[in-house]
Length: 69
Image (cartoon, rainbow, N blue to C red; front, side):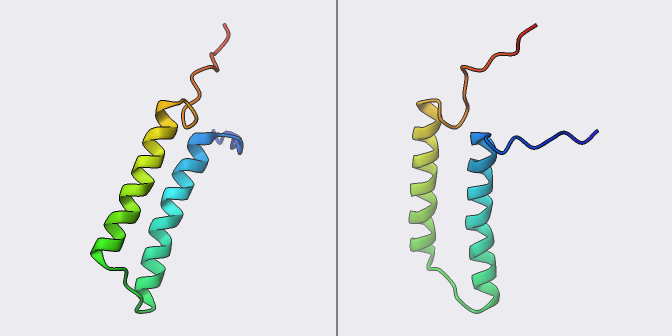
């Protein structure tokens, strides 16, 4: 069964953002543009740190929503 996509989901947007970054790197590589390993590592570190901070403060995964019975 296909469920409706919750476009307000913070987890969805976080995941899509990470995937778009990877897609940009792959498309750029096809056209001969390569990011240095140092730059790629720095960008990955920044993204990981931001996601960790957002996760810690509850932005990425909203724990306030509970399923009602």
